[in-house]
Amino acid sequence: MGYSALYNMNPNRPISAYTAEQLIDRLNEARGRLHALIACLPAGGWLGPRAAHLNPPLWEYGHVVWFQERWCLRERPDGSRAESLLAGADAFYDSSNVPHDVRWDLPLLQPAAVDAYAMQVAEAVAARLRREFDDDLAYYAELSLYHELMHIEAGWMAFQNLGYVPPSRSEFAAGPAAPRQACAAGEVELGSGPAAGFVFDNEKWRHTVAVATFDIDANPVPEAVFAEFVGAGGYAKRSLWSDAGWAWREASGARHPLYWRQERGGWQVRRFERWLPLDSHLPVLHVNRFEAEACAAWQGRRLPTAAQWLHATAQPAFQWGNAWEWLRDPFAPYPGFAPDPYRDYSQPWFHTHGELRGGGPVTDPVFKRRGFRNFYLPDRRDPFAGFRTVSGK
Image (cartoon, rainbow, N blue to C red; front, side, top):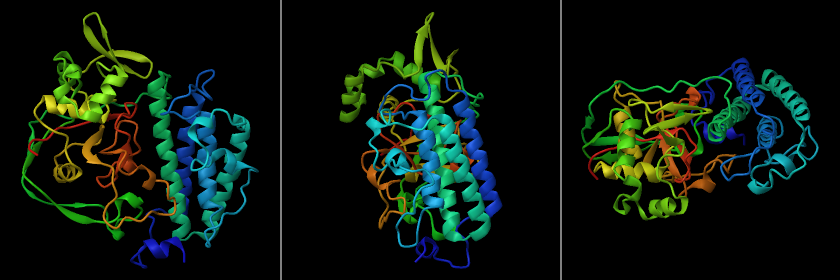
């Protein structure tokens, strides 16, 4: 039985909104954006520093190509896997079986050889899409596209983290000043339905939850407000932090956001390689969930739940999408969860990661939909993530 028969509850509705040619174009566009990042790597950047939140770009490039080949060319109906175009590729690039710590030590292909492998795979995928386009292949091509776009965003995060010069300047947008928005009690649908087209397994399936009355910030918390929290000694006030948050703060020694410094009596923030003065309107970015929780508590408020966030963002005038937004919820499966064929997308990360929604300044628009669930470990500070606060319990 093909994957579409398991996924598509309406046999008259295709899974993908793309035609074969549109998918080919989108895959080529994504590869061009990946190459633009690669072209800006500094000397020594192909491997870069070892860190738990980074991958060596030379490994990551090969992994993205391998993933596309694995799902679009090698998947068989019986669940077995055909041979790769590249001998030994699985031993290098299968992220489910290659431990993170050893990726710097592998005898990886050099960039020109990865380019050749990438070209072979792209040509073969395009030919197959044109020759035998169906729901199963469309699903796997779309999965590969979104996987590559996620790695491109991870590349932008690494450029910010390491202070590299980016291929272009991202737009850091601020929403218009507005009062907090009151939201009446009601019911909210979490998750997506089978008519939604491609969705990830952690979005399945739609279910209804009740939401009590609350109010929510019209915009994510700005840098200026977070600077007030820092100036008020928020990082030293144990009462504002959860147990896990305080343990992180003590271990990290953090006293302010990761990319901030004080210069001539004022705060500056680093955007890639440039230090800029804080902006009173831009959302604070690169704070982890522990920092977000503490700043919300300092205001006598909390982070929103996913249901509250969805309830608020359903209002047409509500602005979102200029920062990933930490939620109060842990990243957890919905009732009846079952993993999709790429079993390691969600399942290994449940209950240890925190949930985010929205999208940020380097996020592809395809992920800026209300139902998309992002997730990171709660101590991660490298994502382009901020937060809002809500009232009540």
